[in-house]
Amino acid sequence: MALRVDLTFDCVRAAELAEFWKVALGYVDEPPPAPFTTRAEWAASFGEPAEDEGDGAWLHDPDGVGPRLVFLEVPEPKVAKNRLHIDVRVGKDGEPWPRIQAKVEQLRAIGGRVRAVFDGHHVVMTDPEGNEFCVAA
Image (cartoon, rainbow, N blue to C red; front, side):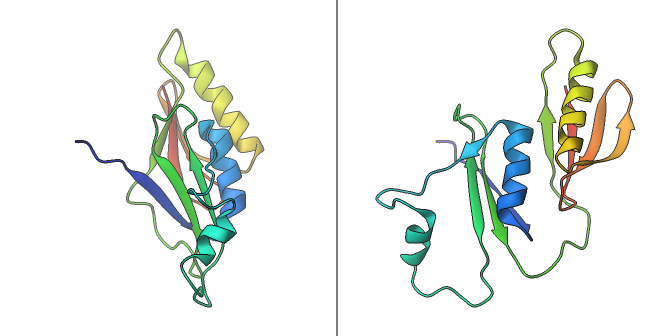
């Protein structure tokens, strides 16, 4: 039996970063687990939160294919390059470079930054909190 994988981002502003990744990947907000009706109700079921616990956001692929993404607010800043990064794949049908460029422009408009362009192949970017990822075919 294969196991599922979630990707968890430590971040400064969970809700804002989740909004970026919803656009990047076409993901949607994940509802709280049953029987809870809100995430706050679910979180309260664990008892008193620690003083430094921040907010969180949970996303999932509406087609059920990609991993769940979790965004948890932490007090410390990002200080180094990611050891794992996401590749946003736009598909290889036809000529992919124009689709790569269009996705890059869409993500730049909502706070993504271009780090490097490998013309015709892929673009290295960062999300609004500096997490590295690539846009490729």
